[in-house]
Image (cartoon, rainbow, N blue to C red; front, top):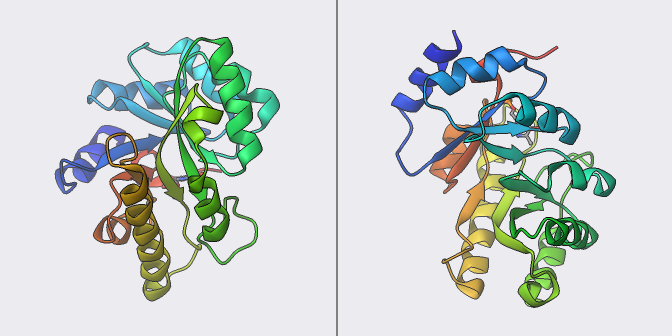
Length: 218
Ligand SMILES: *Cc1c(COP(=O)(O)O)cnc(C)c1O
C-alpha cells in the first residue's frame, strides 16, 4: 500500500513541492518500501528514533527533524540531520549551532512560527520572529543556516480558518524573504495529510505527510 499511496500523492503534486514522508512510529520496513519507490526525504519527530533509523537505513536518505527539539538530544542528530524544522526559541538556535560546530557542519534549519489557535503547539509569535530576523543570525550562529519557516495549523475541518492561518504565514515568509534575500531563505514548510492542498494553494513549497502514505498511527 505504501508504494501506491506515494505514487498517488506524487502524481498530483507540482514538481516544485518537496514531499517529506513522515515515518514517525513506523518500522524500518515501511521506510524501505517508500525508499524503493524513490522517496529520499523522511521526517521523524523523536531524535533518538530518527538516529536509530539513520543507522539502519541507506545513507543517501535526507532526514528531517519535524518534532519538538530537546536541546540535550541535539548531539544525537547533529552528525547527519538534513533539516531541523522546529527551531522555536532563540536558545534552540544557539544549542543547534553549538552541536553543529562540534561536528564541523553547517546545519540547515527552519524557524517554527506558532500559527494555530491551540496553545499546545510550539513556535515563535510573529512579533518575536520579526525581532529575531532583525538580528544578524549568521554572525551569532555561523554553524547553522536558517532556510525558511515552518508552521502547523490548527487541528480543524474549518477550511476558512486553515486558509487564514496558512496565508498569514505565507505573507510573513514573503516579507522575511524580502529582508534576507531568497538565496538561502527559500523553504516554507506547511501542510500535512489533512490540509496540504490548502497549504500549497497558499504558497507552501514543502509538505510533511505521514498518514496518507503510511496509514494511521496508534
Ligand atoms: C506527525 C506530523 C506530521 C504528519 O502528520 P499526518 O497528519 O500524519 O500527515 C506533519 N508535521 C508534524 C510536525 C508532525 O508532527
